[in-house]
Amino acid sequence: MTQAGTLDHPITIAPIAERVRVVWRGRTIGDSRGALELAEAGYKPVAYIPRGDVDMSLLERTARVTICPYKGEANYYSIADGADRDDNAVWTYETPIAGVAEIASHLAFYPNRVEILRG
Image (cartoon, rainbow, N blue to C red; front, side, top):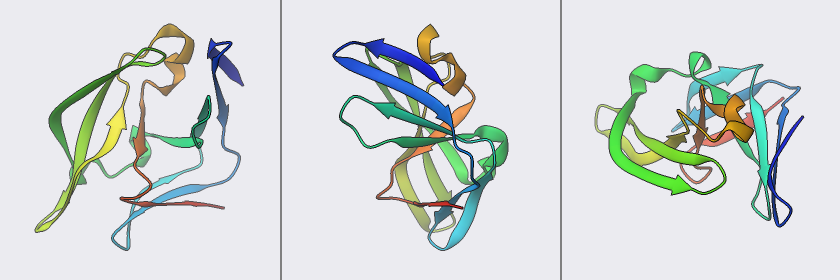
């Protein structure tokens, strides 16, 4: 387990032991046994899925960029397949702050846009 952040804003990153699937509009777009869980301060834990376990052909990079003082610069993707689309539904820290470097090759999904299934 990795611990980062600050005393008043702790971050922990740990492997998720079970299989994690990402389902978008009834379709599995991610399936991993190597996902990580990032728990940050008072927020709900977030599953970070390795890019190699996600169907990247359904993701389109957007211009959206945000900055987190604890993780770094986040870039965003939309999920799109034909007429079906969810803008900025995925984020990634491609060059995160050193304390959370292990999430660099992972993607996170907004839970109101996809289902994250464990087990």
